[in-house]
Length: 153
Image (cartoon, rainbow, N blue to C red):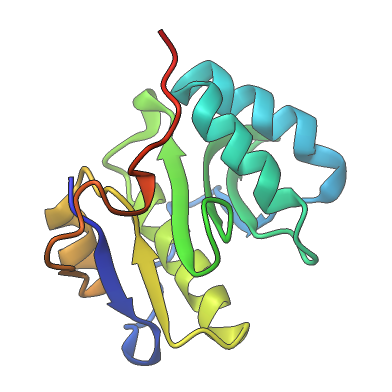
């Protein structure tokens, strides 16, 4: 899976999430709840990266919430500085614009923090990122940053 590059200085206007969904930066006090939810839905590796995003001040993790229930999350500066991700939406909530809204909120925050570009590492949804953020593939980037990562047996 290739890495992608996004120009943060030319982002389009962020989409609004569906009615009744709150999109916001995660609170530090929510770290355990968010990381546990991520582990349950997406596994331990993503949960570890999500935890790293909470070490940033302000937290580099955004959440989508409806009626105090977590629907999705998106992080940056977790895998490495300048990297978007991990990000995910609960299976039952997909295809309702939540992922696009989380992506946009996170990328806009990266731009406000002074980044000119974001890297999306090992993207499994290239077409989604191309459509939603104008991402382009970085040549010869597979396996990229993740080369040599310890694997669980």
